[in-house]
Length: 247
Image (cartoon, rainbow, N blue to C red; front, side, top):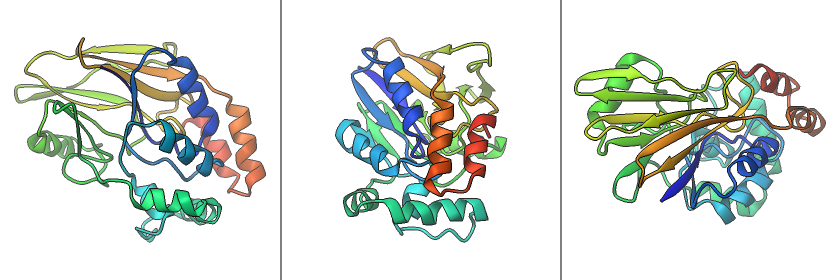
């Protein structure tokens, strides 16, 4: 089976459209590691698309916040403003859909899992080496896809040794990860809608479970169009500026 795996779309319709167009014909199913909404200007369009097209989805922390399942006490003022705006835009149907999104981990094909933050807590950021080691210790399968950090990465565990694998460089558009039998992998496809690795391009992954390989991709999109939607929507203008910086 061939999967298109996306995460952290964050209501960026231009980014999503570019990812879908660039991968047309290359996948059988779409999976998403959460955070469909918030930050950008098209939450309903993204939710409507996901409801119709994603085979498996899980919730992210912004999905929870924007449908009232979680508070925003630990969010910065910019994020709080974006949540408030998004809650005012979502249709009743999409609010209910967000409320009913399942919590990860979710098993796929009985051979790999989707989580939002980490295998042990959906809201944990896998950034610190100790947190990554802890995640490996609780992994129930050899391959886990995660999101939340907005940073595309691939971590391989060979025995007790963990290593970061190369991802897509600024002058590249793809990087292939061949999955070795017996090793464990934590892979973040990156963010479709708001990358934070100083590369503004939308990020995603293609996983072929038969060939046992993952192709990490970066895809240019209509950045100016996405920025203008944010500015026209009444969202904080800083959110448009962040898109161009990849932060």
